Image (cartoon, rainbow, N blue to C red; front, top):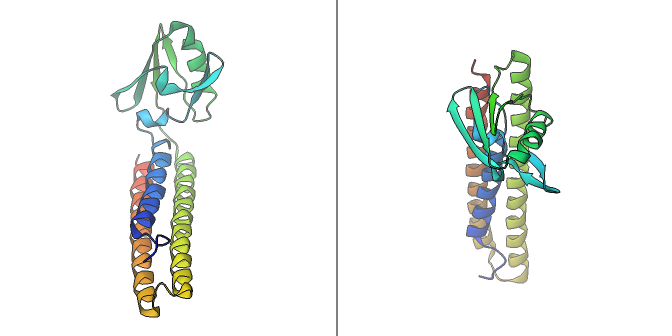
Amino acid sequence: MSDEYDENDLKRRMDGAIESLRKEFAGLRTGRASAGLLEPIKVDAYGTPTPINQLGNISVPEPRMITLQVWDKNMVAAVDKAIRNSGIGLNPVMEGQLLRIPIPPLNEERRAEIAKLAGNYAEHARVAVRNVRRDGMDALKKMEKDGDLSEDEQKAFSEDVQKLTNEAIKRIDENLKSKQEEIMQV
């Protein structure tokens, strides 16, 4: 069998799509404090957009509170501004170099919006998995056409690819379901 079809590579790429989905889900606000909530925020530090977690220690001392201990006191105002302008609806309270970020409870309408956004993220992940499936199927068809695989082998491998795809989509749906339940919790 040639290098064109690699089941492990397909699985790795599908797992990558699921991992990417998990990271996107971590950035969704659920009404509970999570350090992942601040991860997508970039701060203009020293002329360079810098991830917020590279400018201080993020911790979650309470279920509805995130604290950010900024290392450089000259950056506190910039970090505060970046959080306020991030569009996630958080308003930090400055206490010296410590930013306390209370997580306000979400109203029902906002919960529904976030749940819908989670659904969009999941759909993007499904599309990515299907694209990987298509690549695998195309490689198998090409190998059959080139005479590297018999028709029966191609069918067997196609079933394996489909099985991988079904498993990946099932995992995406499970992640989505649990995230939506978490979002809708009051």
